[in-house]
Image (cartoon, rainbow, N blue to C red; front, top):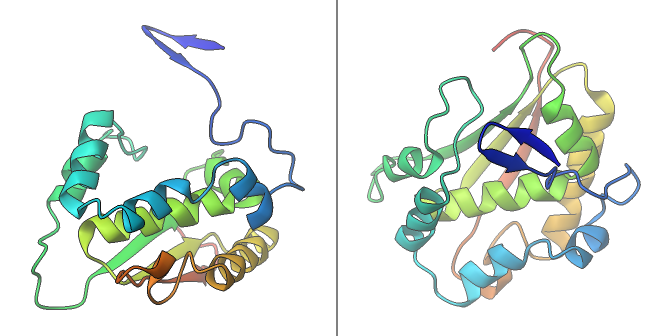
Length: 177
């Protein structure tokens, strides 16, 4: 266990992962997609999801540490135009590899997280922007998307609910965004 000030942190996102056990069957065996399924099948409202994220204290990793639940709450529920969810796994900062490792070892966690965020904010289309030099990660994320679609965790009427979410990967070209 690593101790940073008064917070004790254990590596939860990548714990027990080795690069071979990233497929859907492995993720589901570890409890993956259980939260998405629970939210959609038990009628948990988007507002309740946002309240839970706010209460969790989850913060962004972009330098300012902005509270994620607060950010999600800013999205107008009745926006008249199209809304898109964009995840930036470009890693334009020198020496950072967290996004690459999440895509390589636990892509379904990212997919489930994006689907939950989309549900909470009333979004039906999402994109994950992946760094241009991460060819293996891009291919793996695309394969994970296909697995999630085939299992009903992405696409139309996810988990038999009225919620639909189309998620796409976009391969960048190595430029800083």
